[in-house]
Length: 319
Image 1 (spheres, helix red, strand yellow):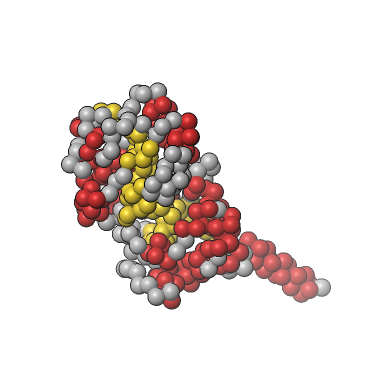
Image 2 (cartoon, one colour):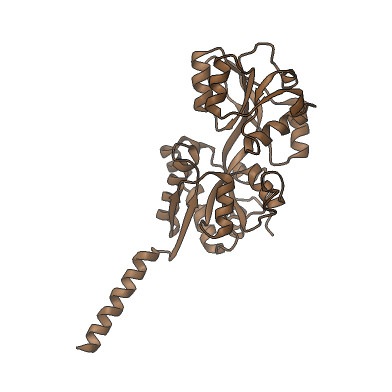
C-alpha cells in the first residue's frame, strides 16, 4: 500500500510540474507598455501565438515601455520585451537615456515588428520643411524621452539645434491640444500611423504632416543607422491627399541573451509563420515581414532568430 501511495504521489507531482511548466517547459514574461498602448495590445496577441505554437508559455505584463523593458530583462524580471529600435541602441551603446546606467548587453534582437514613424505635424501653412521650424514653438517630447532624441536627431540633420526653436516638452495629447489652441506651431510625434492624437487633430482641424526626406533623411540615416525610410500613405489622415515621406524607428521584439536557441527559434517561427492570423487580430500584423524584421537593427540578433531568418534566405548579425 505504501508503495502504491508513493507512486500515486510521484505521478501527482509530475502532473503538477507539467501544468506549471507548460508543454515546452519554458516560461517567459514579456514586458510591453501601458495598457492603452499598442505595445501591450499587440504584445498580448504575439504572446498568445507564441504560447500556442512554440511550446513557450508567455505572460504579457504592462510596463513603462522601452527603457523599463530593457532594464527588466537585465534584472531577470522579463525574458521578452517590446522596445523602440533607437532606445535599444542607446542601451547597447550606453548613450543618451542610458548614459547614467552605462551599456546594457543582456538582450538580443528577435525581430523588428512595425514602423514607429517620426511624424512632424503642424497647422502653420508656412512650415513646409524641417528647416522652416527655425524660430517656431515646437513640441519635442519630454526631456530624455525617445521622442525628444528623435526630434533632436531630425533637427540636427536639418542644421538646427534645440536653441533654434522655442522648444516645448509635451505628450502627444498635450501637443495636439496646444496646436489646436495656437500655443505651438508644430509637434514631433513618434508612433505607428495612424496615431490617434493626429487622427483627431486632422479630423477637426486643418493639420498636416511635414515631410522628413531628401538630404535631411540621408544625413540622419548616415549618422544614426537605426532610422529607415518610411512612407505614410495618402488617406492615412483626413485631408492627406498625397503620400508623406518620413523616417522611422521600429517597434522591436527583444529577448534575454541567455534564452535557449531552440526556444527563440520556435517563438520567432510562431510569429512569422502565423503573420496572416496575427493580422486578423491586430492591424500591426500587416507589417510583419522578413525584410522589416531584419533591417535597421544595430543590436545583434539572438542565434535562434538568426537560424529562422537564415532558413528564409536572410543572414543577420549575431555575436
